[in-house]
Length: 77
Image 1 (tube, rainbow, N blue to C red):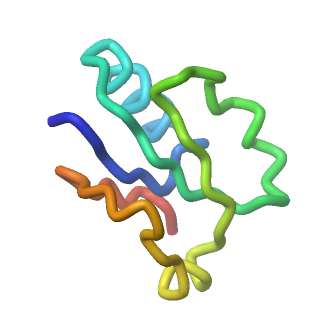
Image 2 (cartoon, one colour):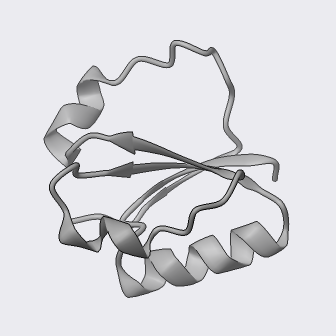
């Protein structure tokens, strides 16, 4: 796995998954709410890209860079 998408990154399972993925040098695209106070728990790492979008906004997200992803971990609720 080289590149994944993750929702729920600021929860306990999401934070643990980020740690495991970074150990494997996986690039992570994280979707999180812009106003979440828990965003500060997302590590500052070159393998992480953050996109601010709520769950209701995900349907409107456009993959402008045309990157492909190997997995989608949907941990938000």
